[in-house]
Length: 149
Image (cartoon, rainbow, N blue to C red; front, side, top):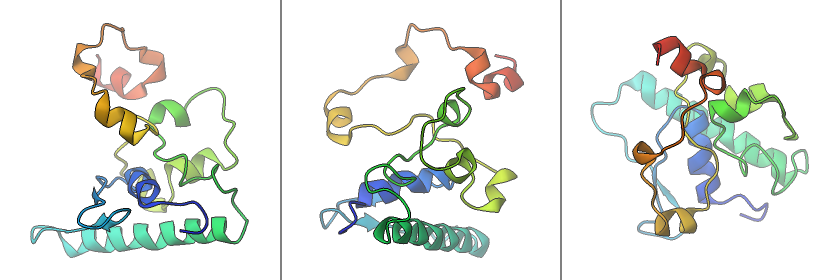
C-alpha cells in the first residue's frame, strides 16, 4: 500500500482483535488468505468482518495523515498485555485504541503473547519459550496472578 501498511501489519493487528493471524503471502506475495471453516458461526464471521472494516478505517487514518506512517496502531501491532499495562506509554495513540479497537473486546479478549517481531529474523532464529530460564514477573502479567501461578 502507498501508506506503508503491508499485509503483515494487518495480520498482526488482527491479533489485537482476538483473531489468529491468517495465512500470508501464499499464493501471492504480500496478501492475506482468510479461509473460515464451515464450523465458524455467523456471529464469528460478522465479528471478523467488523474487525476488517475497522482495520480499513485505521489504514485510512494513515492514508489521510491522521496517523503517522511507520508509527501507528497497525505498524506497531500486535499489542500484548505487557505493553498495554506497562508503566510507560510512548505510542501516539491511546492504550484503549491499541487493546480494545472494538467495544466487544472489553468483555472478551484474547491477548497476543508477544509484540511486533521481525518476521525474517524470527523465522530464522526460532526460540522455544518453554525452555526459558527467566522467572516470569507476576506483577507484569495479571493473568498469571489470577490463575495463581
